[in-house]
Image (cartoon, rainbow, N blue to C red):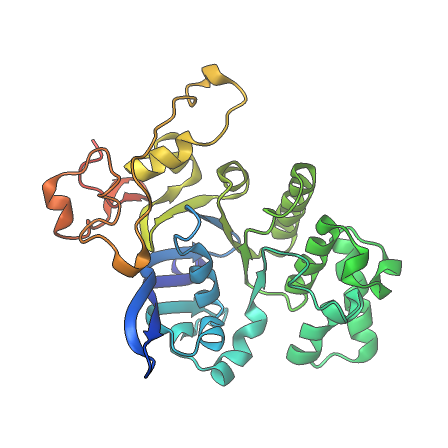
Length: 335
């Protein structure tokens, strides 16, 4: 249904210019994201996977509109259509910093490193309270009550509110980051590899916490990760990226157990399996290295490493083909 759509990303491109020479002229362009499209529904988790450097984090930062702030010269094209509860649709890609501010409370982010993403000079209570001071009209007593409630929701004790980030473990710091992201009751949280810096046992705790939060609050997650076993566990749908482009998109069961794109198959074959006789133990080794985004191959960006590439793959980027209900792949030769 249309009213279930929370976010529509259409042909998103994020290009970073490189300047050089005495006069600092533009000499090249890094095509970090080069035409990505997907939709997200309310209350679902979409997993975004791919190798390091494929543009996953850039997509997440573009969604919350902080890329322009971090890199003023960045070139962003396409549409990031956010559907508000009242039916209004806002294109985040077109908004300036001041224009984006009224919508900041509706889309939040959990960062990869739980230590560097928290201000070391602020206590846990001050960190969680900060978005409430900026985006709400709560009184001091209401904010304090909200902070204590959030700490309880993420499994922390009230007496820990006065401590500083360096006094906690990595898992506890990430819980603080989750509480901060939840403070303003957002509709969407971008999770940028939120468990990659944690131990395996702590990863499971954080993932279970996020699922419980989603069940209770109905928040949507864009879960960015390179650990496919984690993505399989938490995601309803999965999008696979390679060198700034999306190559496969569909339900988690379809992508994991019936991958169509050669890159998806190679990526999934690299996942360690506990049972070698499970049928997923055969590895697909890709030849060559990942090309630089400064000089992407013409046509299909994966053709230089693809085991089924053909001469015409160098001419045009292959459009998405529907392989089943909601399952799309950018390759004409998957069979």
